Every structure is written in C-alpha cells, then in structure tokens.
Length: 283
Length: 288
Image (cartoon, rainbow over all chains, first blue to last red; front, side, top):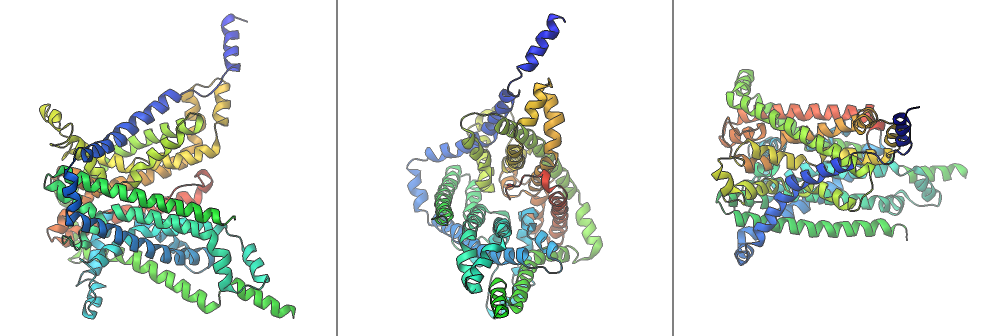
C-alpha cells in the first residue's frame, strides 16, 4: 500500500463537516447586502438627512390623509378577508360538494394574477357603467373612485392569505374534541365557540396581519379603481410616486419611512397579540 | 333513550342540512363574485371589438417589445434568485453559525416592503439625485429609467421566493445524507449535484414558478424605476397601464389577457406540483 493511498483513506475517515460554507454564506451575505440592505439603508439615510424637513412632511395634510386612507382601508379589507376567509376555509375543509377542488384552486388566483390586471378588471366591474357599478349606481351607491373601491381591491389581493392560513389549522382539528364536547351536552354553537374558535384564533390573527401588511403597501390593484383624488382617494404608495414625479426625493423617502415604521409597529403588536392568544389556550 | 342521545350528539356535531347548504352556497357566490367576475370581465372587455381588434392589439410592436422585456427580466430574476436561494439554503440548513434567525428575517424583508418602496430605494440609490447619481452620470451609466433598474427592482421583490421554499424543506431533510456522501469521498459539488439536488428538485421548481410569476406580473416596483419609455423599458403590466390611461381599453384588456393566461398556467402548474409531489415539498411552506 502506497503512502498516498493510505493518506487518502485517513482523510476519508476524518471527513468532517460538509464543504461549501464560506462560498454559500459569502454569496448569501453579499447578495443580501447588495440587493436588499444597501438600497434599504439608502432610504433610511435619505430620511435621516431630512432633518427639519420632517416637520413640513408631518404637517402636510396630504401625507396625513394618504396614510390614514392606506391604513384604514387595509384594516377594513383585512377584517373582511378574515371573516369571509373563515367562512370559505370552513366550507372547503368541512363540506363535500361538486367542484370543491376547483373552488379551492380559485382561492390562489389573486396571488397569481398581476396586480395591474386586477386593478383594471375591478375598475371595469365597479365603475358607474360596469357590470356591478351600473347596477349599484341607480341605488345611489358609488364604489369606483371612493375609499370603498380601494377597500374592495385590497380585499381581493388579501383574501388568499386569510383562507390559506386558516385552512391547514381547520384540517388538523380532529373530530374527537367536538365529539367530546357534544357528548358532554354542548350545543353546536357552544362547541364552535368554545372548542373550535380558540385553536383557530391565532391563525385568524396571522391571516389578518398578512392581508393587512399586503394591503398597506399595495399599489397596482388600487390606483385604477381609486381615481387618485388628493386627500380623498390617494393612497400612501401613490403619494410616494407623485413626490418622485415632482423630484421631491426627500419627501418620497419620508412618506416611505413613515409607512414602514407604522406597519412595523402594527405588525409587531399583532404578532404579540397572536402569541398571547396562542399561549392563552394552554393556560 | 340511547337513540335520542345519538341524535342530540349528531346535532351537536354537524350543522343542520339547510345551514350547510346555505354556507356552501355563500362560499361559492363569494368566490365567483370576488375571483371569477374579474377574470370574466377581462375576457369580455378584450373581445368587445371582436377577434381582429384583439389580435391587432396583441401583435402591436410595442406589445411585442413589452413581452420580450418581461421575459428577459423574468429569466434574469429567476436565475439570480435561484442561485441565491440555493446558496442561502445550503448555508442555513447544513451548517451551524450564530445569527441564523436574523439572516432568515433579513431574507424575508422584501416581502414586507411595499412594491413602490422597493422601486423608490433604487431611485434613491441610482437616480439623478441619488447617492450614486453624479458618479453614474459622469461615467454615462444608466440604471434607473433603463433596463438594469427594472431588473434590480424585480430581483428585490422576488428575492425571498426560492430561499423560502428550500429552507424549510432542507431543514426537515437535515445534513445526514450529504454528510454520508461526503464521508465516502464525494466532493462538495458532487454531493450537491447527486444528493441534494434530487432531494430538492420539486421544491426548487415550485419556488422558481412562484418567482417567475411574480417577476412577470410585478407592477409597482417596476413602474417607479422604468420611466415608461415605450418600446424600450416597458414590461407587459406597464403596457397595460399605458394603454388603459390612453383610454384604449380594448387593447389594455387584450394585453391583460396574456397576463391572465400566465396566471392560470402558473396556478395549474402549482396545483399539479402540490398534488403530485406533495411529499417533495416542504410541509411548512409559506404562502405568498
């Protein structure tokens, strides 16, 4: 046996951890830094250098109205999605009917449909001369170019988040707890409220948070149906675009930073609430 | 006596038939109203002036150049994010090092940023008044309002897709198989190609699918950095917007049908992967 081959056997025996950590981690960090962290820090730096310009931004009624509109409509849409999503998830998991698989697949469509297409399609439906709009207009209900229209667009893009977070939880809830509750004399309503709702609640909050976060930043599906009337139907992301068109980079950065900070705080609170509700079940 | 208890328990376990029927009907009506109607309206509006008008709109040179641009951007984004996703998943799931949770949070970051903000950050970095603007101008390099800006913004918004599919799956699989292959003398590259890749191929495909669908459909981020130069920096979603804002509704909806088709193909492919290769995908898969 040659020295070379015995050395080779020794090295095989000693084969320790896998190779490639420096390369893989290096690539990850460099890409993450260049594509995500560097651009985002450019934003923070820009708004940090704004200094006293912040007072002007904070006192701008356009900014305040846009943030209020974005967060308000995102909240309403996420609430709608949570309730409707619970109903859809329940029916898809618990009931058997013709075409169930088809309707289940439909839920993902708003994820897959480009937002600009959703935007023009919803406008065509809800505008005064659209399929739904022309039916509502004589009844004095106006949806396109109002905050209601914005909320409808946000509800469309947020729905899959709510259904898809609740569905697996409903699926995993075995019938045994419901049977136990029933055999102890609980009515169906009590079983729903006391046995099914508590384990479902954390996923409802998660779905709400996902739909809300998506709604706050949403742009493509909203701008067509919003009509973009200043201080009435002008969402925060659109205000950023307008400020960029006016070459007010600092103003755009300030609105973006406010938006990010507000969503961060709200999502943090929702996360705390979700953890609390999830833990409360075991007390 | 026993019979009445059974009935009572059964009543407490299931909703009455009329309620089940009502809830199912409500679910179907809601899904049709929320999801199917918008699709139907796109098709009807696109064909409002007949097939020849539809085909003229699709065959328009600006539309064709938008299709080319969209595919070009999507291919680059998919390749870049697949490479990044595999590298990140390999590092995170096969090794121990401090700061993993922070790294995972940072990888997910682009999902919680508004598409408009994703475009804005690149304008702040590379725009005329941006940090690197004067330098780029001096060297005659165009990033914002040109193709590189569109590519960068698209890569940003699709950044986490592949990594997110691969990391949970590779975490479940653990490093055992790779370590076994490595201890038998296989090189790192061979281990990856012969052991890891076959294990993750369906999840990788799933991530690529979601990544390419989002890349082709992205609107907000791209619209901020593109500058909407017709025939040059227009992607399909931007072309839809331009035609729509020119009140050329038929053409706008005609181009939109291409994107609808893309969404339907994506959904069908996704469904097929979820049905046929459920065990090869991560069970803790995130939804986007």
